[in-house]
Amino acid sequence: MIIRRKPDIASSEITPERTYLNRRHFVKKAAAAGVLGTALGPRALQGKTTLQELHPRFDSMTSEMDEPLNSYEEITTYNNFYEFGTRKSDPAENSGAFRPRPWKVEIGGMVNKPGEYELDDLLSGITMEDRVYRLRCVEAWSMVIPWYGFPLSALIDKVEPQPGAKYIEMKTIVRPEEMTHQRFPILDWPYIEGLRMDEAMHPLTILATGLYGADLPNQNGAPLRLVVPWKYGFKGVKSIQSIRFVEEMPINTWQVQNSHEYGFFANVNPNVSHPRWSQARETRLPGFRKDFDTMMFNGYTDQVQHLYAGMDLARWK
Amino acid sequence: MNQKRALFTVKTILWVCALSPGAYLVNSLLRGSLGVNPVEKLTLWTGMTALVLLLTSLAVTPIRRISGWNLLIKLRRPLGLFAFFYASAHFVIWFAFYNIFDFGYMWADIVERRFITAGMAALFVMLPLALTSTRWAIRKLGKKWITLHRAAYLAGILGVVHYFWLVKADTRLPSLFALVLASLLGFRALQSRAAARIKLQRSSNQKG
Image (cartoon, rainbow over all chains, first blue to last red):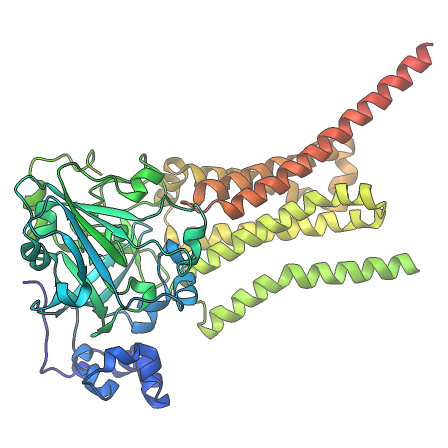
């Protein structure tokens, strides 16, 4: 598995203290001010009394390539979630009225156990875990994020898809009264994404319910979102309301928006240029320079390249 | 005297307005408060400011004609130069951070991405206009200066196209810019047709 935790090494041994303190600035400030409850949400704190109890494990956590995590503040104030606005600061500012609970997920299509499930019922018996992944946006920036969630395969196994199901299609909820920008025809709502069944079953593919061990903030796709670390970030459909098992390849929202620029697979690939952004390099936020060489499959080649054996990846964008 | 004072006031407002986005960005940069993606913010703000100033400079003549306030013409040059200043900053930021001072990367970006092609073209159109905005150049070029500086409209078109092509999905703001630009062009077109008609009438009168 590609997650590596170093529970016994103090972060001060890995990172120079000044950098460390700087990186943890937000968390420190929050703890000092005693505003943790507000920052992470009361639900997140069930059974945990202080931030100190919540966050020590993250101090020593890195990606499998020893990359430091982006801060909670960075991850939750810079988002692409067009349902709440198209500026990066919009989702954090406009998603306050969104209610991620109670939540139902509709399971449908070619599946033995279709139905409308309460989210908590759907998740019962499934083990949650931390997953540190690089998130590579098609806009050529990236972050390192400690997700909290579970393999999508666990959910798929639970609802028993039929042999004819070749793809899985997921949709974001439509609530224009809460999702302010669904009132405008910016994209063809609802937001739709999909995966081939073998991609969906891959152990790296997760559904996240949280980050930094706490519930997902609304701007990051509460209460349930997809994370596929070897694909561009837009594949990670947020606030999932519907999951369908289908025979035909779903047409995802960005492909509808601009089929010339976006395809179904959207695998991170530095060799396939994009009409808007060179994909050869990326800016590792919060940095300034676009000088980080983008890795094939976002660095997860060994784990996923077998899925695409014999496929022309320049053609299947 | 009153006229002079009015001009001074309007010019002061212009300088404050035109310099404040830059001051805000430099201040935020120094304080480290540009957010998670500082370069994106710098790029967006300088580009947006350049475009707003450029379109404002194009609006000077129509507003002057409509209001009859001829002093406004004095604002056209500083507006154009400020627009060029922000467009240049926009270019330098892009070259420095996105292309990490690499001419090969820059060239590939210009050739492969049409919104960058349009943006570079806009900057190239603005360059000779900025260089010929000295009093000396205006005198030297005479009537040719007027013809040359009509290219400001071309820069405006290229700038709006650049913005339009850059935006992925939410075209509301670039559409607004396009609408403003279209009205400005429309106004000038109507005006030159009216001017042509007057000229035609005069020449036919002379014949008669």
